[in-house]
Image 1: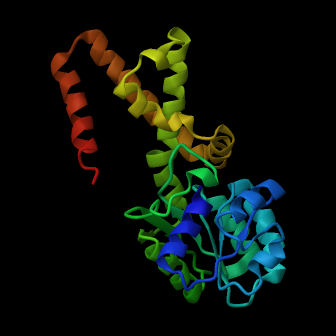
Image 2 (image 1 turned 60 degrees about the vertical axis):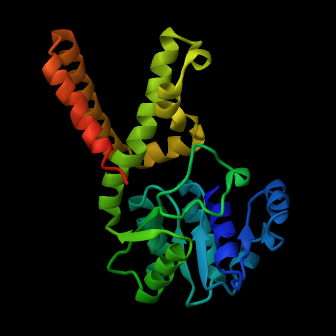
Length: 266
């Protein structure tokens, strides 16, 4: 979805750019060619002559891909990714590709996956986080910043470590909580989906995300996610105490703090 959306957005906003797409399986190549004729399963053909290469794959596949593309990239080519965990990815890919690689994470997506879910407007108004290091080459950083700005993102920069800490709380923790919430409700009420209204749907939407993808994300960023889960467990314990004690004033204050914070979302 991310790779397809990026390609659709670039085709719309920069029709003068030449786009080459790569997919691993023959079936994926065939589907992608229906939208983008210049799609191949040959990695060398995909990256040769490119000014910019974006890896939109599961994070577990990126190091092998970087090894495969490195011999075929032009010396000036910039490389980035779209993964949601950065420390390990940046360390591994910078080791392979040097300062031409700068990590990215566009904060856009949904619980859906695959090219069928791709949208040309996916990145409009979203934040894209760049994670440069002291080794990052300025031309590569400039090219990658411009890429995300072209498709409509507001770009911010931070270290890979700060990224992983922050994103564990605003992205990974909500996915974990949504999955736990669905499973908790299902233990006592398996028929919940047939009875539920908007509250259930809104709070559990992201639990429908691809399990294999999120398994890898949770394990790649496990220490930061576990810290977030501990904080969430503390909040749940506090909430249970307020309900048990029937402390209406404190309970309302608890809910009011959450509401005020939520309403600060743009």
